Image (cartoon, rainbow, N blue to C red):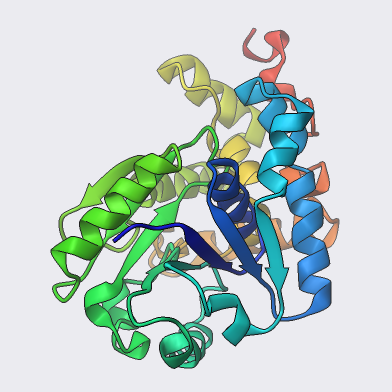
Length: 297
């Protein structure tokens, strides 16, 4: 199957990035949002990607605009998927929301359309049957800042056809991703299975008063040579996402550490310190402290 027309459902932080990266790679993209306000918010998020693409990929305004020209926006779900070769769902991590979405588009999309979920916490087998086409369904998970953190973790079910899987592997390459082929279902895929324990360990040290976030990040960066520590990563993915990280991994049987982490994160959310998207989280943006030469001294 040749993929030409792609529908991205959901224009949040990651959905908007997915839509633009695909459009920037030359594909026709329809971004679906449930309301006009959702569409306007998605347009704003996509436009805000311009300086990052220009800095990281060394592209011109004209090149960025060429990507924008490949995107159309739609609030009618049936119309959004009517001509799609591939639908990528990037909706909230809620089973009922995803179930309703797939049941709605099962009859609206062409029979050959492949469905892919960007879910970071749910397995594809949890909602494959809702799609009405389990052989043409899998998960395709992107990391935040996908134009530079360019992995696409591809995870099918026992029902996913080989043709569907390989089509998505090739599509990942076509949109300048490195396909990470997951051989069996695994909560957290590869990336989050390793990343989540790091973030929880950092937040636990902070919550227990062992060290402040900058000290924790500095220690990790100096000792491992990593470009950022756990709190810089949390800023990048957003504190609203971080607060849903499985806190069971905090390692305390009575849940006190997990509760302390949640309380401290909620305090920052209440101050609108959301991370990169709001200009402040644990660091200040667009020129965060951890990127300054003096930070590691």
